[in-house]
Image 1 (cartoon, rainbow, N blue to C red):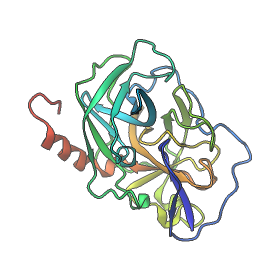
Image 2: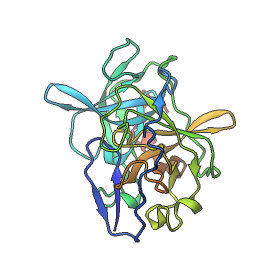
Image 3: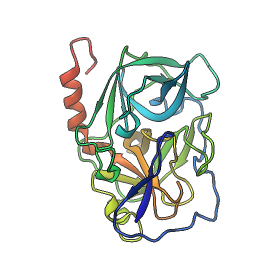
Image 4: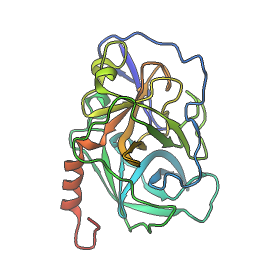
Length: 277
């Protein structure tokens, strides 16, 4: 039985009857799962998705601003009935720099084939339509998406960003962090001793060593360098239930290039003349 965790800070342990895999011990380097604190607003498409509890809002997932009125995130982040808001231009969750834009959520569109009882089935993607459009500036910019079907090579330079837990079972980071996660190609990631048949070709893997995504990073971007520019190639989805940075169990992302048509269709069907294309 293989254990894995979705990355939302609200997530519980998911058990799946999947091909048997060895249980690896945590990497002996004991490095911080979330990497290092990012330079403020150096990933200006990163957003904080927050839910309301009582009179306060709390960070639960990341996401990517893909249009002035649209955010891309993971389906498992938004498949519960909650009151949401989106913070754009955020860096420190405990401090107001004046650069932040707080947006209400107009609607949430979850991929119709998403199944919350089977995360490994894929389709862990959702779009959030904001109630108003963001103002683009040096602190708030649109993430660049890859062309449909693009597959990056093994070890392509990528970074995960988010406010997720800084160690397995640890506390959330108050400041945005970044971690270098070289891309793991599908042949390697789906091989025996790695994730095996748990991962599909519509997913992309990153890391597999001391650094990884963890609870609270869900929905956030895997930023990959292509021709001198960072593009968002992944949406943080799940990690091993044996630890966020379990060796040979890289962080698993929804592969963005597999869902370009679906995202375009959703936006075209919901948009009016006032909605940015």
